[in-house]
Length: 116
Image (tube, rainbow, N blue to C red):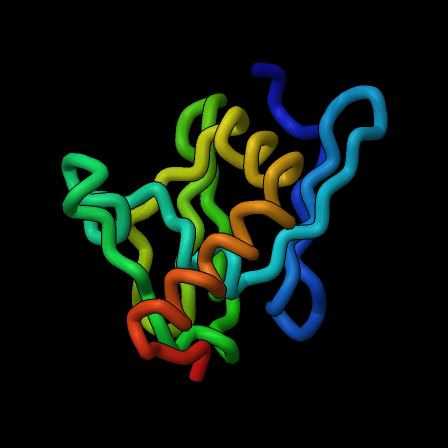
């Protein structure tokens, strides 16, 4: 997967815009990135261990740091910073964000949790 040509955090820190070569551009909310973090803390070590993360409606991005030339570490203002977002994962999130968001909202409702 080719690296993005641009990563831009909005002034309010609530949105990450990722632009890939060929002008493929995705806007990913901080909340979506936080609740779908690729970290073991969220994803677990197997599908059965995956955690549904509630209460992140107002989470913001503190910083985005490069990890080699294949990924970034996104730090959030709730102090979560263990997710390594590869270019491939960001690209997949961009393409699947509507479906993944709907699944997340359904999981919250099923578990009696809220976005906070």
